[in-house]
Amino acid sequence: MEFVAILLGLLLSYALIRATFSLFGVGKQKNLPPGPTPLPIIGNLHLLGQQPHQSLAKLAIIHGPIMLLKLGRITTLVISSAAAAKEVLQKQDLAFSTRYVPDGLHAHNHSQNSVVWIPIGPQWRTLRRILTSNIFSGSCLDANQHLRAQKVQELVAYCRKASEANESVDIGRAAFRTSLNLLSNTIFSKDLTDPYEDSGREFKEVVGNIMMEVGKPNLVDYFPVLKMIDPQGIRRRLMRHVGKVIEIFEELIKERLLMKRSHEADVLDLCLKISEDNPEEFNREVIRSMFLDLFVAGTDTTSSTLEWAMTEVLRNPHTMEKAKLELEQCIGKGKLVEENDLSRLPYLSSIMKETLRIHPPIPFLVPRKVDNELKINGYTIPKGTQVLVNAWAIGRDQSIWEDALEFKPERFMTSDIDVRGQDFELIPFGAGRRICPGLPLATHMIPMMLGSLLNNFDWVLDNGKSGELDMTERFGITIQKAYPLCATPIPLLK
Ligand code: HEM
Image 1: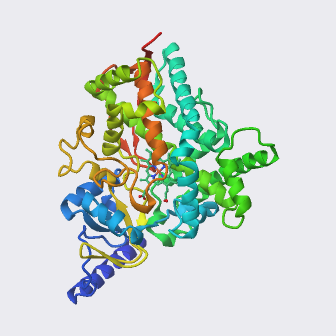
Image 2: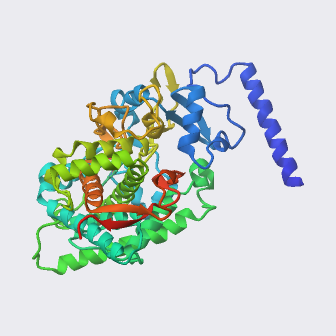
């Protein structure tokens, strides 16, 4: 009773102070963007619901594409139109380029060494250069295309095995293992999970745990005063999981240092070489953080896109038919899709773009922050504001896209709109300085996996009814299907 009375007393005093301030116009002098009225203490948190990307898209219809909210103590700007996204990610890119770092990611100093989270500056530039020039450049990707071919072949072999046992395949899980092993082979020249078994291998489990914890809404991110208490235990658990990954990376690094190099140079060799030349800036902690970033940023994003793409193709028999016909005519039924085939498969590429339009894996991009007060379209954005760009809402904007909610890859057959950060109506990889550096890898790997699965199998759903696929989303670090897609593969060629 006493607690409720104190709380009511606090709310009443707060309401009185606010009413007095607004009566005298205090706080009104700045032209802040419109937004829903915040409640005391929680602000607009109650409006987020289970699917914040959907709730904020609905609110933007009422308040506009440049909307200001208060999430707990955190002032948050939500951008929901292509024009406003262009303003933030291109015209004023530098001013919007700092990240808003979730509390859990401070575990083991990760956020201080990570290319994803550190602000733009000399250290970020060095790390970014390593990624774009030494790992994801065209020539580097060409040099290790055999790895991608091998991993796609293993994925198809796994599905063949399932079909022999008349078992269904959990497409998202199978694609996750494929993406994880592709990265582990690119970095360490070895598989870190079993390509043919779904049972846990420690590394896969621990990466999954990190993503689960980071994806949970954390009270500390809305009420920084709770930092010391960590009421949900998210930071404590992340300390444990990140610590485990660090141990695994350290083992692999030590193993390598003892080895006389007998394999082709991989990313670990490259990083150890850069570190020899530049031990201060590119030390062991930074190397480990970079590897963790690659696994966290590059696995779930790729596998969930494949799962959504397969789901949409299975729901739309006409799309399935067209995709299979293109594959048969261009590369021949039963073949794996190789890198060189991609430019001859425009419909397959359109399916990928349409999937990324309607199901962008990271609906708010990675949150940005403004370090200094600035203006956008005449509105004042206060210093320290968190910035969410709702790529999910932009991809479904009815004023841009005809039949916005329908899956129609054909729209990209006659359009130049691409996902590379130049067309702000389609920004699943973000745009500007901080655009996703893994884009070239993902846009090779997704159509190779999808095309190979379609060109080698027919797919039968457990209930046999393709039109009835459940499309419910589950919000987290990436948007997943709430109910995983499971289907049984029937080989096209015996
Ligand atoms: C950043 C999306 C795959 C590594 C980002 C951002 C987005 C994104 C939206 C933030 C961009 C911004 O703030 O403007 C995606 C999608 C993927 C994907 C949709 C697949 C479908 C990958 C892969 C890797 C990767 C395969 C590497 C293995 C990164 C890194 C950053 C990043 C390191 C941080 C860049 C920085 O802050 O400077 N990604 N990503 N991503 N992504 Fe990806």
